[in-house]
Amino acid sequence: MTQQSSRGKRVVRAGLWASLHNVAREGIGFLVFLVLARLFLDERDFGIVALANSFVMFAQVIGQFGLGTALIRERDITDRHKTACFWAMLGFATLLAGLLIALAGFFAEWSDEPRVAPVLRLLSLGLVLTFMGSVHAALLQRSFDFRALALRSLIAGVCGGFAAIIAAIFGAGVWSLVILNLVTASISTILLWRSLPWRPAFALPLQELRELLPTGLQITGIGVVRYIGDSADRVIVGFFISIADLGLLYVSQRIVKALQTILTQSINSVALPAFSEIQDDLPRVRNAYLIALRVCLIVTTPLFVGLALLSKQIADVILGPQWIDLSNLLSILAVAAAVSAPLYFNQPLLIAVGRAKTALQIATIGSIVQILCVAVGASFGLVGVGLGLLARQVIMSGVWYWVLKREIELQPKDLIAALMAPTLGVALMSAVLILVPEFSDWPGGVYLLFLILLGAASYLTAIWMLDRNTILQVMRIFKRQV
Image (cartoon, rainbow, N blue to C red):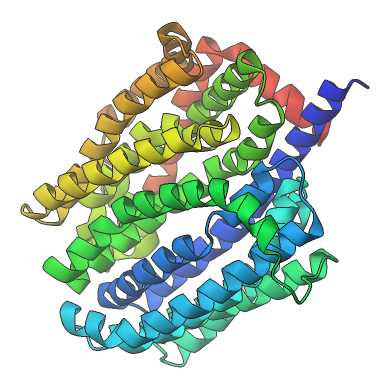
């Protein structure tokens, strides 16, 4: 077996386990979210946790220093590099958690929601729990051991979800979401330590830390500017519109994100180490990118467009009639997700080929564009925020195309070839779903299932006729590895 064949087999197998990893983590979490949303919690509960989590996740991005990604990216690392990363991240996480605990009262007063303060203080403790396993998770990803990550996510997700639902049954309300986060983080870190025999030494190797920091700080910069942009909508809505509207935004984004994570992060999590292995061979990097892009678009485009077309039925049947107000916003966010699908692999691609500085610059532009679009849209209410997010994705698609044309010599014909089949297939599917008559006497769940099956059949028929070779190639690869 050749080295290239062996690497390809390892990457595909890793992709399969990465799929299970993301399905376990996001799928179980999404099911728990649906149960809590339908039976126990309202939009204010979700809005409180969404606002608090915005600050916790920002601290998590800063506290990592990009060191986890640097461990994956660098060719040669030692135990001293691992130890340096562990203590640097854990120490800074502790400081950031203390800062958030101190500022919690200020954020609660600003949002005019007293419950934000205690929720933020407890969620901040999860920072320390998460960072205790960050190096282990990076090392498992570096070695393509997504099997261990998948099992970890499955067990931690089940335990956290079970604890949250039990708490909600006993009337915990918003605290059930806090319990979900803390239990999941605790179990996840424990399992990571059990999966990997490596343990940090009681030392802080400064030389090794300095070796990783240049790459890590660039990656941190990317994460910070991207997160500021990505969380701007939640902060603006929570502070300047209402906590209830933030809850509607969060629930809509949670649905879209669940699909994005399950469908794209499986490939994305393998992309950085896979691109890094061939970073010196530009034609192979470009070819690998186009293959990943084509497969991603064929899978994601119909699902996001279908979600946009069926948002009202989905909100009514799955979440319950109390959530019907979010259907318009959900449609807009689903379209935005479809537009952003070609962008999923761009950042790991640039980092892998040593263009982290370029990725940082683009992330900065994206954050500025998002903040401006959301700020303008917020003056028109929650739907305006959604339209602002959609406008941001359209603008950044053009920016990213220009960057990839320069960095990896991406040609228009290659991009059009990747977009053609899913675009035409989705056009046919949309026409079918729009023209189908409404059967008002059918139960809502039955009618929704009928529409999903009809849309899937029309899309699969079209994509089989338009891009049969890609479908067969993907099926052969997965069949061979399974």
